[in-house]
Every structure is written in C-alpha cells, then in structure tokens.
Length: 117
Image 1 (cartoon, rainbow, N blue to C red):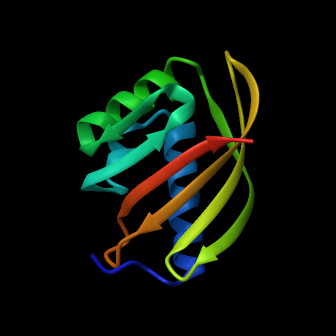
Image 2 (cartoon, one colour):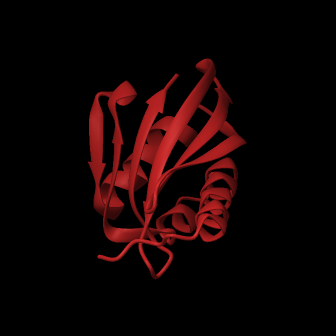
C-alpha cells in the first residue's frame, strides 16, 4: 500500500482523528481507518487490529475515560510517517502522548503507534 508523503494531508487526517475522538463518534473515527488498520498502544497492553479492534480501543480508552485530546505539534519522521504530539486529559488525569501515524494514498489511516512521553 502506497503511503501519503504530504504532511498537509497527514495533518488534516490527524485533525479529523482528534475531532472524531473528542466528539466520541466511533463511526466517524472508523471512517478514517483502512479496514485492516492497526493501533498499537503499549500503554494499554494491547494492539488493536481492524475496525473491530479500533472500535474497542475508542470505546475503552476515549469514551469510557472521557478523554479529550488536544493537538500540540507535528513532526515528519520520514517521507511516509508523522509523529503527532498530543495532550490527553480525562478521568485518568493528564498525559502527553505521541501518535506515529501512517496514511495510505486514499487518505485512510493504516497504522498508529501510540505512546506516552
């Protein structure tokens, strides 16, 4: 799968992801992801595969914890990968997170590697 190499398009995708999670709109989140996409988040102890896994991730760690995400910065890691630095607040407290995001040419997210600073 060919990946987008345009940081502006990737930023728009990151903004859409943040907006959808902040709205707790699981269907809007899923529309941003390829069917076989993966979110790997070691802080949860799990890797979430495909739309069913991503749905579970959003429901468990965004909706259930009333997580609100705020964009902080974007860094190009390579020609096909960006790192989005975000501020998370919710019932768990406060964390700074990193979302390493790859997006396919059609604009769908194919992988997020999430971590906490």
